[in-house]
Image (cartoon, rainbow, N blue to C red):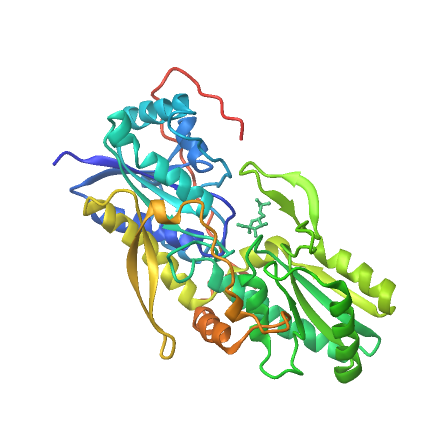
Length: 420
Ligand code: F6P
């Protein structure tokens, strides 16, 4: 069989372990010498494919590729760019085929969340519908943990560990400071409260922080929240709150709507903590502190979950193996076998079952009062933060790799503009 080249790209928000998946993809693909020619990466996701901006990973040493496993972010650049339907956006698909043909790309491995799996699914159809044979496999990634079918998403376990750790640590600070009564930690997650739920792992007893978790799945009842905070301060002398950026008013409007939208059409969120802090100050007069941990949470490779790193790598490896077995339009998933001891295996899902779906925190994972996680949720979350996988440190700081990112010579004369 003639060798064909492989294209890999990272899409959507990056994570602490996205590059561990890249490491799994590249190391595994390098092992298929007889089947795979060159391994290219798209610069800024699918945009790199459209603009013929390809990175030759063959120019990176084995040591540099291995170091991706412990380096956060997206080493090849990521983008939030969604392809429209095959009919609607024919020019883009024709362009993709031109680029694929010019570079003999026969394998397309796309690493992202639910919007990105939609792109992967569309690309998987260009063989049947447009006559260009390409094997397309999606690879799961998102800190939001909201992808369908897979038990959990690579990226989530590490953000969960960071949030639970930071909640526990900040709560110790609050406890030490007599004057401060309220601490609010704002976390990511968009419409799904998985990251907020992870904050709940910081404590075990009702008196342990966090005392309140605010989920996007539960509309904010201001009166009940204020009563809860007051009660908490009276009982424990302070109240630690973990609030999801996706928290909504009963009207459905985001508490932290910035009025901006990203290229996927999502409302840009951020700023729920200051809004809540204002309300609390106004209604109760308590001294507060808050943290909007923002990018810190999804880049915190220094406290990554060992389980997460292992799964992220395994998903990348499985994606290449699936492509080599001839599977098209699929995505490897994490299948949980048992909670305690935690056991899991690699499964396979159809991209059509994953694309554009959003898995929220089920009601049974949230306590009846809507302010905390249940035992069932704890059972689900706990294994995902287990284990440490510290990066190497040099001169007191984590030692991360910066790739050379040598570009592949362009073969097409025509340039293609992308509004990304
Ligand atoms: O990847 C998802 C996410 O982490 C969301 O939780 C968050 O709202 C979003 O990314 C923000 O990322 P950016 O502004 O970089 O697109």
